[in-house]
Amino acid sequence: MKGQYMYLGLDLGTSGVKAMLIDGDQKIIGSASGALDVSRPHSGWSEQDPAHWVRACEEAIAGLKAAHPAELSAVKGIGLSGQMHGATLLDAEDNVLRPCILWNDTRSFHEAAELDADPRFRAITGNIVFPGFTAPKLAWVKKNEPEIFAKIAKVLLPKDYLRLWLTGEYISEMSDSAGTSWLDTGARKWSSELLAATDLSEAQMPSLVEGTDQAGKLRGELKSKWGISGDVVVAGGAGDNAASACGMGTVKEGQAFVSLGTSGVLFAANGSYLPKPESAVHAFCHALPNTWHQMGVILSAADAINWHAKVMGKSAAELSGELGDTLKAPTGVTFLPYLSGERTPHNDAVIRGAFIGLEHESSRVVLTQAVLEGVTFAIRDNLEALKSAGTSISRVTAIGGGSRSRYWLSSIATSLGVPVDIPADGDFGAAFGAARLGLIAATGADPVSVCSAPKTEATIDPVSALSNAYEAAYSRYRAAYPAIRAIAG
Image (cartoon, rainbow, N blue to C red):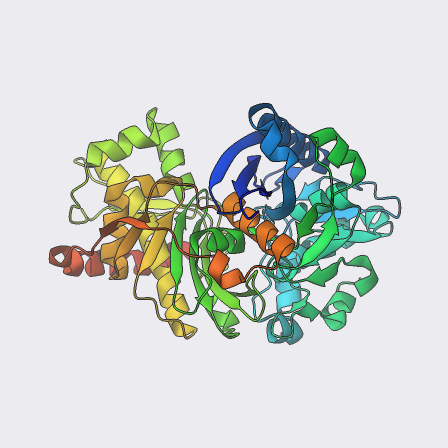
């Protein structure tokens, strides 16, 4: 009977919704996606219409149904993953009051600073109030769109708006809610004190469950549309990084991964709550009960090489290919990847990127090398911040589009001083992690057993012969931030 049922993971990303079907043995049956666009009506703004999330989800499900109708009809559990921090505002009739303000929207940096100056926020949440978090966005709405603020009946995170569409329930879970600046992260519950500080109440928040818990059942209308009979449990799910950790098996103390996606993440699982907000490290709840994680985040990882590729009129793969696979010593050209500000360790929405040390001989290859090294050193900054917060990392697993570059992984291994594991072929990202959570919620299976690590295809070791050169280049990188911060405006 174990293999008879199917489990569906839905991952609401910034650029699309991905739907993935797995069976009871966690074999991937198929996946499909629906595309999304981002609206940027003003500098620093980033928004999406929640109706587009539903449309993209329907497209992804339709793709799965076309390719795997029998398997889709056997779904018994659904897990949700999603982009974090987004402010989805609903009135009493569940009408969306304005476009969702996304995670990478920086308009509320003044409001974030004001909330962060209130010592209760760091003390209760264990985190700096970053401009991308949800609470300062609501403070911005109250100040700039008071007529909308007055109508707010519910504030939902993006994936939980999908849950409302799927189940009719207002429910969230701990990992995603930890990124709002309203969660008592150690106690794993809403803080009425912090909600009141932004003129909101717990009645305007969804109820909270663990990511592995049941959190609603699929509505009959959607079951009929998708050809499903019987109850379908929807799991609490997870924010995108915690879901990726579930997919990668990064759920136990000492396990870590580095993600080279649009943004960059250094993620470490913790068996206890270890806040150190002054380091700009995120201390969040994990998707599994009684588990937390620390996470350093940089805002431009693969985005930095994609920007460089666009300027150069080449693809990112072509530029990376020009470097080859053999790591080179840094050239003296330094790149700061702060194209849209930075989160860990600087918490700086104003800082912008730079090339430093250019000369006549600085070729395209030299600039590409500097871009990759700049992101590498930003991740090294994250490692140092995690160390200061009490986390020790002995190796990391690499995921995300940028992990296809062996050169980049060699750079990261050498700078961090730890081996970088490359998982065997497979998709172990957020949609897979969400599907695992759907399986756990539907079957009651042991979360740690289900969330196992994939086999390792290869390991990239640090290049010890270049460690001194990399340390010197990292020192130059570290010195550059305060220098250009003084002229950033």
